[in-house]
Length: 373
Ligand SMILES: Cc1ncc(COP(=O)(O)O)c(C=O)c1O
Image (cartoon, rainbow, N blue to C red; front, side, top):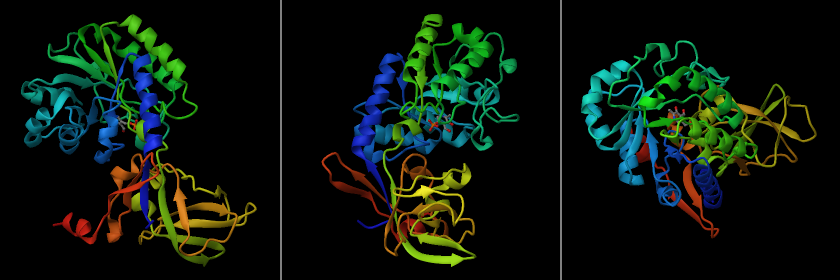
């Protein structure tokens, strides 16, 4: 197998999809895929066996929904543009506005779309500011004190996204704030979308609590259709990024294995969040001399000085050509990668249930060149 390559594993994907389908049934809600986390459209036929819809946040994602997933999108964009709006409407079943001014500007052109408004409960437990949509000064959603008592007739839903890799305990606390602030408008609505960030496929996620929460919610508001739109949960732990060691260098006692992948190009969330990815067969360590194994920084092959992470200790000396496997590298990575420095983009493969590895895409010089054509 030629590295670098992202490998999505069909069995693990089906495991997540079947769990999510079960959660949808037990919570009497619709679960749709957020493309912002995962958009490998060659896998959509598998998704269609389990779910019926997706959520888009741009014209390109909305087109992908219609043209490749085969169903109109639930679309939310922070800011619709005049020259894209009609095409977005063509590709969407639901259309959520981020602000009252966007609603005013565009709602008459929304056609058959069911119109929603993003609301902001001013409560989120997301610690990392980069991912917190309720931080002071946020540009996301309308606050309760900005809403008129009587909503415009054509607003049918509220959309509320304030989670990130969260458990149902967080949702339980957040839901109290959502209801406290917005329940008085619920009688005027048909649906509510609780956004993404519900990590139901994580092993320790308390699904029973979510089921109880939703039972209570449906009893209080039986007329409201409930929608969840996670991305990560669908692709959570569905496969690795496999890289190879290209060189090993040492400076001031720090040994770095330089790989044929880059953190900034191919695993950007590691640097942004930041978080240490799991490396198969290695343990994280805090210093070059700590631990029993042989400790390395892992370095990217871009020229960015900060394109490294570490340390990890291995039970042997790494060799040039040896594979390094970064676990859980499908969600967000495959949609956020870039070709900075002209670095070769990892291939994308799918490991089918029958053990066959299908190469979905390989990247060439022309991919790099033509983006700037
Ligand atoms: C509006 C909205 N919906 C859904 C999602 C998907 O979230 P996640 O991938 O954490 O489930 C996001 C992520 O940022 C989002 O902003």
